[in-house]
Image (cartoon, rainbow, N blue to C red; front, side, top):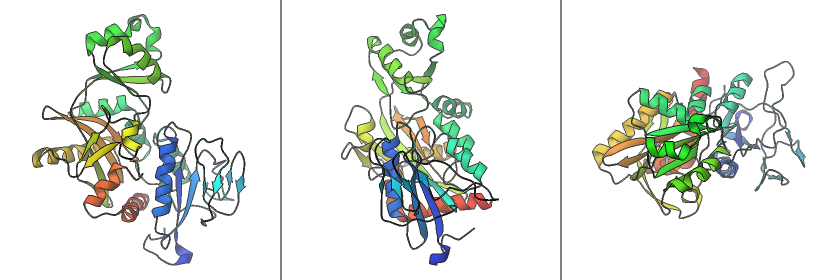
Length: 368
């Protein structure tokens, strides 16, 4: 395996950045992937950005393990020159091909910049394991667990980590007599207001704050259109926090500074996350030394319990002096407004170095 410190052109590390895909978080993934492609040090790496929605195959090379091929088979174009292929907007649009050269042949390592189903849930991780290609971030099991909010809560609760009271409702549940009146059951078991989210989505896609029973069934149907199950949680008002965990030394996770999120909306919704000026980020969070330390220790605990590797970000809410885990992100966003890069910069880790660290963790895991 090549060293990431080798500056020789002939021995540059070949990095394939997987982005885009077909999930509801496609636009976020493209923004993340493009920023990674632009920021990776070109004196160290030969970089190719690949929109997986346009990827025709992961083709086997003759007599060897499967490789990420130099050809993207698209609906409208084929690129055989190793150039970067991306799309703007919907996947049905013609791809735009940049003039920046990439590489041909097998990637040495894959930087996963995919979000949501198919990219963050263990699917592409399993494919890369089968292909024998090192990749950034967590493995198959941790990725699948963290993507499934219900399973994440079960694992964390079993270890004594505080999570918000909630109920998971599936499409099948609604066909059973016991769930013939879901509104009444939620009223009895949790009470309103509640927060509803698809069980296996991110970026608050399909989420709703339901303040009264008459809004519930419509919000539940919206969540179940995106996933086979929905998580209904008691709505907790408090200070929203997020804590990144990074293996600054390979194999040794450390917590980054606590970030306090002050959304412009009532809660941290999609626009608050990704629109310019949608939220204010306070680093370090204004919650005092003791609670900050507890939040960092809890984020590290969650990282280890789920089995995350390389990097993760744990979202929490502080209410009445108690920390509640909201979810764990195994592929944190890397857009201009993203939280983990901002937290890393607070301790002197600029974006290109952050990418170096994440890639080093991937190669360390491969050697191990």
